[in-house]
Image 1 (tube, rainbow over the protein chains, first blue to last red):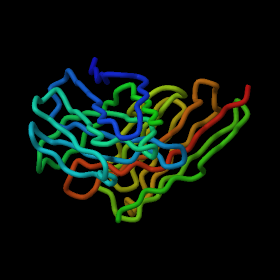
Image 2 (image 1 turned 120 degrees about the horizontal axis):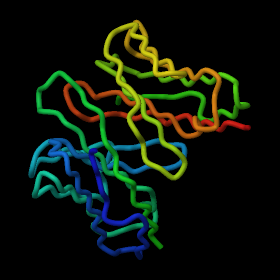
Image 3 (image 1 turned 90 degrees about the horizontal axis):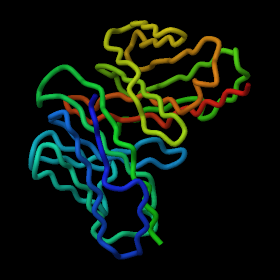
Length: 117
Length: 111
């Protein structure tokens, strides 16, 4: 079974802190994604990566950065946490090669509920 | 930019009633995926539709992709309490692996 794990289920941080959310997948997937989920807004893509050291901005990248030094690990960084970044953060991974016509299902981790006070 | 809208946002049904959620994209999609998220859980892939007019069934669930490949629907026949959750559709941004998720339909089934 594909497994996507996230470093924490719940996290409480103070405004201005630097926050690291880590995601690890064990299926050798090329693609990894970070989403945030807010009531009524669905899942919104923050960043995604299609290869080691490669990244692309999603729809709401402001205030976030990412790092992918190894294929299995994708980190989301909040440089200076703010209260409007309180949310559920979901990591996902999928197969896929750049330029390929097929799309593949995304496997999601359990999520990290981040509260910034 | 590309948008994927879902209606309704919420639906409460009595157990045994049917349920349908609709997904509409502002652009033509190469394919569409459906996910289910149980309360307190994470989204889990249900199905992918690729062809215009395609219809696929999974037991009591019927998925349809519109002829113009801009809309899709999920129909559940005779809902059960195990169907409770939020159903999301997701469509790809052309030429990338970025998927735009719909806002989701939250289904509550009353026993």
